[in-house]
Each structure stands twice: as C-alpha cells, then as structure tokens.
Amino acid sequence: MKKIEDYVTSITDFPEPGIIFRDVTSVLQDPEGLSLAIDSMKELVGNTEFDLIAGTESRGFIFGVPIAYSLHKAFIPVRKKGKLPRETVSASYDLEYGSAEIEMHRDSVKPGQKVIIVDDLIATGGTVEATVNMIESLGGEVVKIIFLMELAGLKGREKLKGYDVESVICYEGK
Image (cartoon, rainbow, N blue to C red):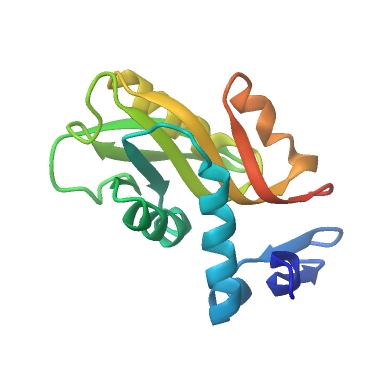
C-alpha cells in the first residue's frame, strides 16, 4: 500500500537553486492519492469537538470541503482580498517579497464557535496565522490546525505556538 509521500512529486531547484518544491497537484491527479490525503487529514481531526472548518484559498478548499462534508460541518472560505461579496474582516501577512491580505465574511464565525483550519501546506505560517487572527477577532476559537504537508525548515509552526497543529507529512528541509 502506498503512503501519501509516494504521491507527492518533489522537484529539485524550483523555483530557485537549492529548493525542493513539493508538488501537491500530483496527489490531486491520482484518485488513490486524493482519497488517502483527505482520509489522512480527516484522521487528524480525531475526537476534536468543533463547529466549523475554515480553509484558505485555494488548496485549503480542496481538502477542507470534503472533510467538512463527511463530518457534516460547515465550511468557511478564506479568500484573497476583494473576492467575497458581503461584509468582511481581513488580515495582512508578509510574503517573501511584500505582503498579502486575506478575508472572510464577517458573519462566518459566531462568538464561541470552535474552528479547525485546514490547508495543504505550512511553510512560513503567515497565511494561517492571519486566518487565526481573523477567526479570533470574530470571537471564534481555533481548536486545531491541520496540514497535508509541512516544511519544517521554514519554521512556520513557530507562528502558531499554543495551537494544536498537525501535519500528515513533515519534510525537514525548506
């Protein structure tokens, strides 16, 4: 039986020399890989009590929606600025060169609701840290954060200290 790592394509020297790019699209393109990825992430939910799953654009949608559906929970999309039609809250985060901003609907999380955040990859942790900040600004409680892959060398977990963070695969490098 294949492990999820067997479905991830590693591309050396992309986008620059010395980097190993972990391509999640090879997981998505294989029915067994996709099923294994979603099932493995769902297992990380375990017995955690929660109300909502939030996923970041766009791969957090791919993994978060089927998990929410299978557990009969609501899904909250976290989008790039300017993509949501109703009143939003937003948070900025730093990129390697510059910054970005994400948003979610102001009414998507009610005070006291427990939220699990799902995304495909944790690298530097900026996107998920911004997502946590928005959820908490609305009175929600982040009870778990789940990733398919983690690039431990980029130390993204450090931005999420104090939160229950799990990943299916952990790569030691960048």
